[in-house]
Length: 128
Image 1 (cartoon, one colour):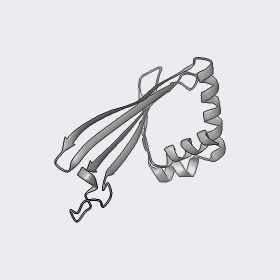
Image 2: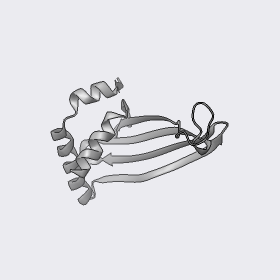
Image 3: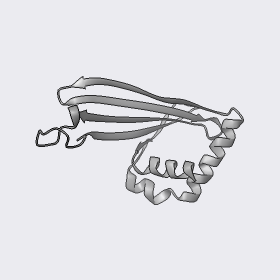
């Protein structure tokens, strides 16, 4: 059964302590060669409203048996056009992010996570 986890659910279970612990374990495993990650890649194309861009990045934590791929999409309007059509009014973009979590032994999809709260916690913990 695939779990679907939204931002509110992630916020209820993620704490600073457990995110710091998970990142600490991941960095130790990285030093041991037990993890893998791919820097983000970007794919984009022009649209009638500006430009669509998708970026993905991924990682494996072998000791946890997990693979995650993060997918972020956004659409930026040309030259910062605002909603009223004037130029210089901001990006007016759409940003949708998902994380897909897989079991590396079975290849089974374990969870689909809305990606709003999760990266905030990861970035804060990394900076800490």
